[in-house]
Amino acid sequence: MTLRPVPARWFELLTTRDELAAVLGALAHAGGVELESFTRPSEAFFAADVDEALAVYSELAKRYHAYWPPAASTTPDHIGAPEKLVTEGLGELQRWRVAADPLIGEIERLRRRMRELELLHGLLADCPDPLPDLAQLGRCGPDLAARLYLLPEGTTVITLPELTMHKRMRRPAGDYLLVLGGAHDIAAQDERLSAMKASAVPIPDDLPPTAAEAATEIEARLDRLRAETDKAEARLRTLSETHKVARISGQIELIAWLASHTGKVSGTPRLAAVTGWTTTPDRAALCEPLARAGLRCLVNFPEAPAGSNPPMMLRNPRWARVFETFTNLLGSPGRHEADPSLIMAVFAPTLFGFMFGDVGQGAALLAAGLILRSRAPIFGLLVPGGVMAMVFGILYGAVFTREDLIEPLWLHPLKEPITVIGAALGLGFVILVTGLVLHAAQAHWRGAHGSWWSRDAGLLAAYVALIAAVFWPPAFWLSLAGVFWFIIGEVALDRASPVAAAIRGIAHLTEAGLQLLVNTVSFARVGAFALAHAGLSVAVAEIAEAAGGTGYWIVLTLGNGLILLLEGLIVGIQTTRLLLFEFFIRFLEGTGRGFNPLRPPAPAMPSSKGEQS
Image (cartoon, rainbow, N blue to C red; front, side):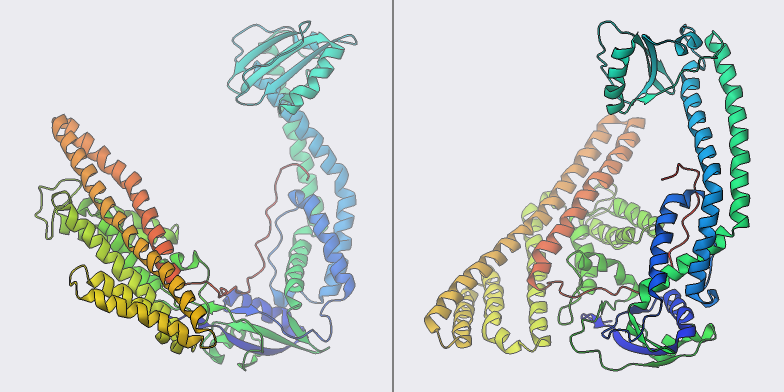
């Protein structure tokens, strides 16, 4: 646990080429390493034709993955000779493609026909109004033409040529448009309706004359088409089993994953050096997953290569890790920057509770956080926020908008608004001073503490003394001393141009000082939102009292629900905004980079009955 991020350790692990795949797999599943290499591999781990074959496989997978079974799971230590597997496997997939193309074409034809009949059935099923004989319409031509369309949802007005007859029919399946007219006019409308995303519905020329009979006939045809499709898909599955598509695709996917990472590994014809960054504390922890897999582990932790940029790790206790969300919004802290997550664990809930003080509503947020945080860690922020809302609810004497159930330990906000605003400004002052102190700590970590004491310490002293002068006027003179401290320090840091340095110091101090004062005043909104929350709570309670009886409980329940959803969101946004733009800007630059661990191969893409891409 520390306010400073910790750089990951550089490691070098020596293995054999034969065990490289298994070693990478074990490291990926352990999740504690990030690969990086600062040397060019002395020999490629895969022949050039393997990369070409993998590119061919990628194109093949894009086209046919919807018709392949899910790739079989394969571990890195069971892939054998990668070059041979890719070459032979790709050849087998090409043979599958030649045999499967006619079947896939047949399946797609059957699916298109089923889709067309399903659209037509949506018009005919439970048809409330009479329709013309569709078979006669299907035989129109060559000068007369009929078209049927399913219109996109939300289509309002359709304009057609004057000599064209049309009928619009609303069905549960959607809006249908039947058009009859000259073949030339109808062809011109085809393009316009297609541009509107209307679906053309072919009209068969062999349907029974009535809508009910036609619907029954279409149902029978759909049953036959489904049976034919099932048979074709069964033949395709048998073909995939014969050509071992699942096993081959699983092996090639794994080899593609290995190929994407071996570029970060250096080696010789027999040995491989896996290098990068690790979060493991020692050799035993790094080697443990390899030992479980029966692999040899020869690892060393030398100094990181010159010019390397180690990823930074935030070391916080478990209860504070959810507040790393705030920190990462502005980027990962660098080596000489502070990790404010622990401090955020105090400031964020306090600000939220100050603005949203209510025992009952805080308990509701606490319960919601405990329930939802298992689904998404971000909801864990509701737990400390709810606790602090309960704490301030006790201080304010508010329980589910009622202020007559418990006595406030501090005050009722609406009765002492000036005190509430003043307390909010005091809280903002503490937060801003903390930011300035963290800036000082960072200067010390960088070895720039001399310049901070010479100049920036004057800004901190001037700010603190100026705020203190509100309560003790003589402190104003200490504030002036801080101003001279800053300017003299600027001159001391640039003795070659003292006049320019003094002018620059005055300008810098003016800008920084005004910014601090504006940031301080900005925290008045914390008090304003506390008053707004109290005012809304009183309004809900009074309306509930006026409603009386059952209406009392209805109004009270709905009012509290509205406050939880609407004002809780607004207060959460304001808390985030204040901390990001008033507190973080004092010290956090986000110059580091996060740890990006080696991941296992992605799960196989599931098969689909969708159309061929």
